[in-house]
Length: 368
Ligand SMILES: Cc1cc2nc3c(=O)[nH]c(=O)nc-3n(C[C@H](O)[C@H](O)[C@H](O)COP(=O)(O)O)c2cc1C
Image (tube, rainbow, N blue to C red):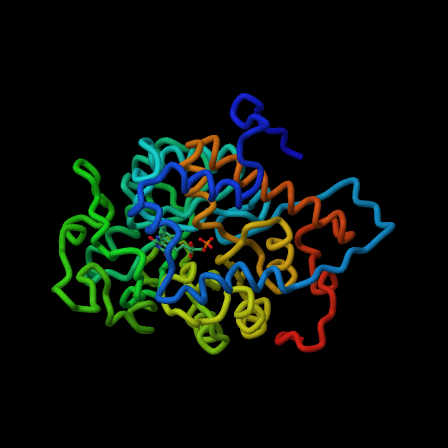
């Protein structure tokens, strides 16, 4: 277990990820809160991401020796202490003056790998120089393939253990609560990883964004994999057929995600898509999941349905907004501790041995 530093998290401080969200809301200006918590359109998928976790029942198992728990897991390039990682999210300096540097510090203290977004307000070089913790770099396909290949080579040289290509955003979703590109960064903040692309503005009324390559396809991904010196992980997959084709193409891991409910409203909850993807991948590469993970029991359910690790987006930003590095660390510690409790109560002692045995059988469950 991970005792919390009392000076940072007194009895009145947030104790759960839900409490972190409420505390963050009290601190953040309206547009930043909408950027953080908003989803696409009517937010059905956003709500389903958390709601569908709650629909799954766990099956406690008794009289098992659970004195020693092993939460370690493996993802491309990293042996993890526990299966909770930080998903890529943009513009951390909107949430805390130290931005991504505070996130990286908190993640390293909590033993969580951190996926740095290409919409970071700190360069990957600065983040990598400031942390010993494991990092991946996330890339949205860019309309300039040469610039893109230079970025992946640069971040690999700086220590990124993998490059994550986000494939679910050829155009952004209908983010009604967030004005896409309209959340103008305050004076002095930039997106250094995007270079000149960051300054391009969309045409009025256009659905396409100048910094996103809406034409990026299978052949482009194959070229990027060939050019990339580190493993390539693909983020934003919900369909089994896409997942199978990605494995054949040579990706190092498939990441189930609906972008936190921010892209295609009424797409399935991430946890509902996971069994389809896991079955298509059939153990050939690791499967990751993000979307709606708020409790240790959610982590256990994702592991049971085929994920080897999960990632959190909004909860880490809430931790950052509330407590900087200490907040990020505490959010991860809370999830990890809750996961350990859930494992012990379900009678499993290692993350790698978690199977559907921990799930209460439900006849109408889609994945049975
Ligand atoms: C404020 C915010 C910014 C995000 N920025 C990115 C990004 O730059 N690149 C990306 O691939 N995903 C981005 N995402 C999606 C997250 O990586 C992740 O898929 C999602 O937040 C997971 O759901 P959760 O917030 O319920 O944990 C962002 C999400 C949020 C909430």
